[in-house]
Length: 208
Ligand code: SF4
Image 1 (cartoon, protein in one colour):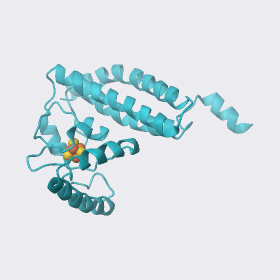
Image 2 (cartoon, rainbow, N blue to C red):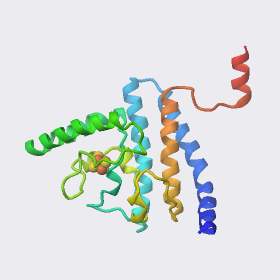
Image 3 (cartoon, helix red, strand yellow):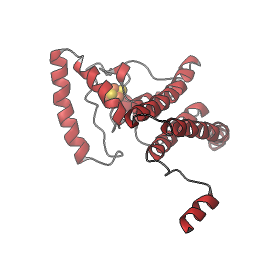
């Protein structure tokens, strides 16, 4: 197992840094353009989501995904929603039938209280308010990027969501690392200039 993990780590190390650099460059390019900040942020998020989905699509096409309709093992953890995703999710909830929408709103109110009461994601284990009785997402097409990145090649790994699991599939390990790094890069780029900078320039600027 240790040997296999080492092989996977080597494979991932080869895939990962180039992708992060490329995406950070893309994010910076978008945020450096003229335009309304909200529109630019949305563009950054769309790009982020499309890369996350790209991993899932490639894995599904290669027949390596264990994910499927009705498997909601990853839907009982704390989900973070990007600000730019809120309108789409609200629209999707409003499109649900009256009684379902009412039920969802009631569950969301309870969930909001639990989110405040349990701020530690490791401790949070509540089913999402947007799950139906069959374990399907009621707003699947509009689901957040955080949900899109939860892909697995081994459903046994999903039974303990939130814990770090070794996946024998290098592409999925890379996808998971990539998504986490993308969140940092996205946040840093949106905060403008808070990404690590080349040593000399950063030092000299602060010593002027
Ligand atoms: S939004 Fe949908 S996919 Fe995401 S956690 Fe909730 S039910 Fe699961």
